[in-house]
Length: 70
Image (cartoon, rainbow, N blue to C red; front, side, top):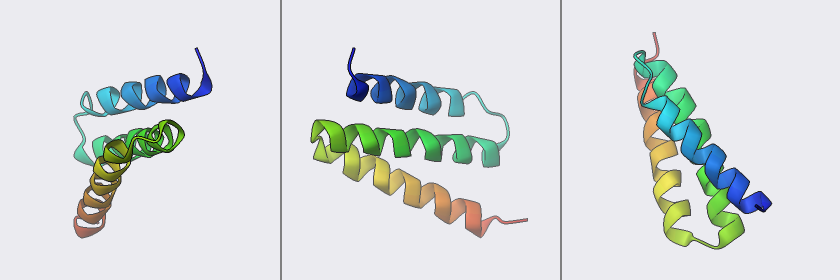
């Protein structure tokens, strides 16, 4: 197993874990970290669709975190 695969597994774990969260704020924060890991994975594996999709998800999560700031 190489570094790229390890980052991919970490990203998958974080995204999966985020969907187990009951608190939407925690879900979005954990999901942002998972997406950031997927962006790293995409860069290391030259997977442009992975980078674009997860970059967009990070932006969406940040938008809703900032919009619903309590």
